[in-house]
Length: 254
Length: 309
Image (cartoon, rainbow over all chains, first blue to last red; front, side, top):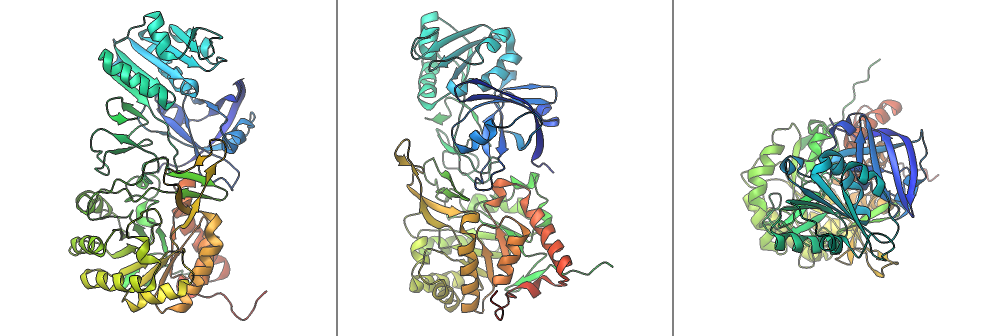
């Protein structure tokens, strides 16, 4: 039977304002993890019942790296964890990006804001087959680590670095082309990427985020609207945690 | 010395290997949790609500955490009774556990259609959801008025092949009156409590946390309300009561049994630990060993009325 695992913190560091990088000793979980999957993290404060879904950034042997943004009391609690402390983890969960279909193709890895971390694991695997296009608000994080894996173009909303604007502005300004897109970021970005991919006729996979409770497909808390009837409920609504979080961009209605 | 402990209970002629069940809506139809819990160990799986046709449910966000609890406004998304019978029920029947199908509807006809479709199926009991706060038409309107509740209970009983549990809403002034209405309508058991209607506002965005604005509050935050209502309902009727509302541990389960529940359901706690049901069953056995209780039925309603503190 699967269960929550108690994982020890290897190290944690702050990468930017409210952005933390947490390495966990995760045993088999790390070996099983696939780029684009996520884990559920369980806090110790009993007043907060629900686990927090956090995307997997990288894996290294038996270690799992999570890069997340402090968005509330739950992630605040995680950000205070130090080396040697433990927390409960369930996963890896969800489907992940279809790396096999990306073989021999030039893949654009589009990450916006806190949607950037899960793209790093994909960059590690695709290496020169990928071009990362990263969109930041202002300060950058993880950029140098992407640069060690694959070519990188970046944009900042305030123009403080790279192209001024968002990931699509960067793609257009730098004339970047690819055969396939993997993307993760806020909904307005995903909407624009969806339209871009459709216009360019490029297959595109996007990773979705939604409030979750169970994380394993039972509670139907985290659904997204889909173009076709879903297999679970037959109602055009898929479960982000179980059927996703990665979907073909033509599948979902944003 | 090994103690001979009996954990089996009987409700409306149906025998359960132990009094720990899953609460509807938190456990799907068992398939997802089957990877985390040996379903054979459960007293029963109570399925997510099943309607006559597929229901799309409410838009997202459907979930919001609150202090010691959570709000949900799923809106009873489900594939309908046909898919349930063809896909979900055959899965559940592979396990040595009882199957209680939660039935939802908007009208009396909706409920009866599902109950009739289930007549020939290998289902042990039916739980009629007349208490979901997230569906505007029907549903809860049957569960907040004693006369409507009695009427729908009668209608369901007329077409049901299996024993009927009426699932009661806590969003009422007098839970005893509602339990009596279900009993008068011919119910075989009652289960309570469903969620309490609540609301959360995101003060940063100045929006409702849920797309549906209101949702059902569950989790340990509601447990004292649930214990009180289980106590009142079990004293108001002769029917067996299935108690639920914020049960996270075996100690919580014992509290409900002592208050008068013949069995308990575990809901929101599954989200905090997908293996929790097994731990509660093991913990209940440990409690019985510790206090020398041979038969779990001896705990039902056994709170001492003669000693206040």
